[in-house]
Image (cartoon, rainbow, N blue to C red; front, side, top):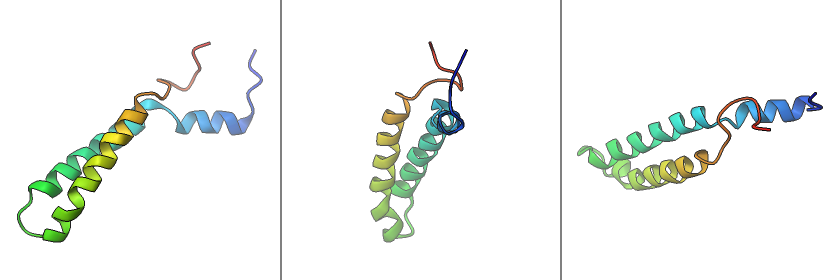
Length: 72
């Protein structure tokens, strides 16, 4: 029997690993594309920041729970 509040259930729904890993993977790819494009120095200058944010986010997302239900 679970005595989980609706707020905790909502937080658990947002804190799943898969959506965050997908989002940060997109950030990593976007950062790489920004670094490799030859047209705009402004886009290039933000490329490393976007790439770094994606890598840090991916490292954090790897520590989130897998699914909606807890492991115990």
